Image (tube, rainbow, N blue to C red; front, side, top):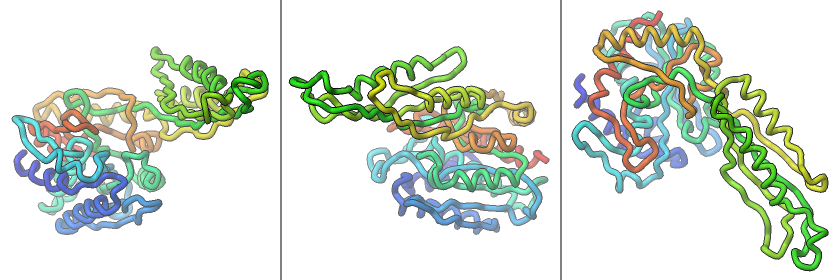
Length: 369
């Protein structure tokens, strides 16, 4: 299949808007993919959505059996709200094709469907069973799909993630983990004019804690801490009794995660009359590059060379569902399309990447055993 034909398939998926919060749109997208896989003879299973999110879809090659095999991870939800397509319609400019979610990650989801579809159409069996899981809530942290992802990962030998390629086609072999916390300070309110001395300022205490938190950032080791949201107080003439902050830390290793989570969870007030509450924890574990992942990457790099392009890898601070699987089973990420502008109004894929990236997925499926 040519790049033009692949792009036509991607366009059809892009033009079904599927913002995570748009249940009807996500369900329409799931139905589209389910119908396409069934038409090729794949077995499909829907896992009912929860908490207002859409269904998750599992497609399996008909020859799968019960042996461990390859798990492909894709997500069908996008960050673009319903109605974005009208302002950002699919279009082609030179080597770039634009549209909401085209790069992250309908392009990658489609080329994986296309790669497995080649086997389904020809009847040729893959060395390992193939399972393709599509999630509906990745863009908000996979709250309802995480357990399913981890469950399927334990039943397989290899995971391939179709998140978009990075920086000129690089694939991802390591990602930072992320921990998120809600921090609250509880002080004592008083009149800011006549009884200022009776108050204990929750905002001032939070400011001191924020300086402690920001000081934990260490660029040399790759640890970052960001206090991204702060709210507090009831009036300029009231010593504030309450302040809240939302904190995120990115963590390159499990050792760093243990140290940083302990530090945040152990925050203590400078003012003994102010109470601190900390809630939260590790949201996605670090995805560390193991020897098994290095071996898997070397195999992919060799296949890419046969196809005619040089494949490089990198570590990134961004998270994906690969963070859940890498601690369980060797995982390659960033196997989707090349492009740029994810989550933006100029999101685009490079048409020239469609054939080689699809071919790489096809050959990985054909040769991993």
